[in-house]
Image 1 (cartoon, rainbow, N blue to C red):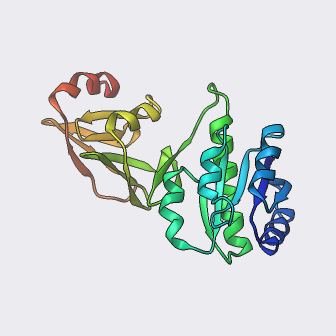
Image 2 (image 1 turned 180 degrees about the horizontal axis):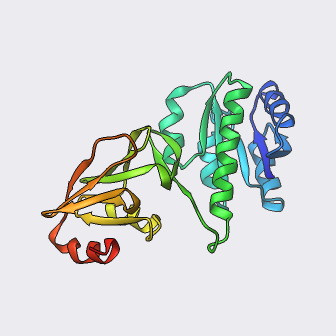
Length: 235
């Protein structure tokens, strides 16, 4: 269970968070605070996994509070001002809740924190079947099984998914390749990474991949990647 605190200068807002947390099994709200300095003192003695953090507070903004923390802790920002959303995600926030938010939206944010917590704390030897990336100002969970291929676009990559719209995020091809299971994905071109299991055929330096019921996708094989691809695909 995730250990959490909440900080908001409005007691009514804290009551909402307390009520919502009491209905969820995945988070334990240990304490609530209306003053940032009291919350900081508590965190120095009792570290937590997650903070529900208001942004617009009189003595210290939530942004300033988060930057002052010594430890790497997950944060879900809660605010009535939507213009803070971009800043929040630049600070690697798990989610951004715009007041007033429903129990359904709150639960979605907590489950996202739970999944991310499990992801970063699981054993290195355990089998991972997904990863998390930041795209469109949100933390996105991507199942490896859903990835068809990845396309490099200068400083960005475009992840083409089965039955989902593509995800575009700022990342290099090398960085994304390092995060993928080597036995499931192969780089076949300077601008393409493909799911090995979806390779249907290779002909004349062209590779064809497809999912069930879809037309084959044609991808050029880079000259420098041909030898490695032959080993993987056992041509």
